[in-house]
Picture 1 (cartoon, helix red, strand yellow):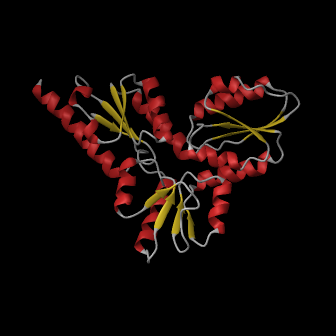
Picture 2: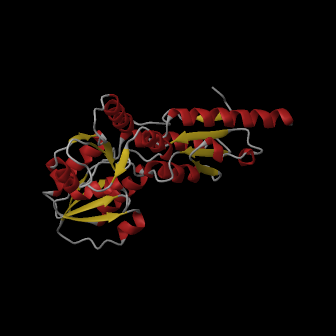
Length: 292
């Protein structure tokens, strides 16, 4: 392993992504005379989605589109409860590929919001996982994307609060929000740590590597929430930080004068993509040093 390119061991597919793609692969292997759909992109990676599109898998966002006999896979991010109910009512084969961590968060919200007055969700407004999580709320819910937005919420006195998070959010900010809520309110508060362990480990390793390099690359889909979070975390410790999807986006000038670069990747980034970028960066740095 190169000492010039520090590759995060946690980079690449997480357990939830591997399980979801494994279910889709198995469905394709056993495919009969039926169409296979995924409700929403199964994961957030354009290259992976292109691969499955080539296999005939169609992405849909309308529960009414499948016909009897078709197969529909629930995306790794999950879907709103109402959508799942509508799909189950149809005469189709449905396969739930929701990440187990997301499913656990959904069920925790369903259980704990029933004994709360307000649910506080730390997550992205338009993210599909968050839309699913909100559908499990059994009390009034407030959604916020950061500490600044959280502080704008007018919290009611003598109320019961339940605080949860999108599974791929920034753990340090979640802990800060939980601390702020606890110290600013004299209310009954339930804090559910729903951030995935793999996300925590990936962020911690990214911080460690970013602090040792002159340039940091974060690889993954630009519509991937966990990849964007890695980028945000990394650039706090390495100002020269780049979010890319493929090797073709790399210009040797990006690492000009760098003797050591860092490389990490989001949970939906294929290992083949990571390896090709790793070897390419190593070649660039070796070439630069040979030319000196």
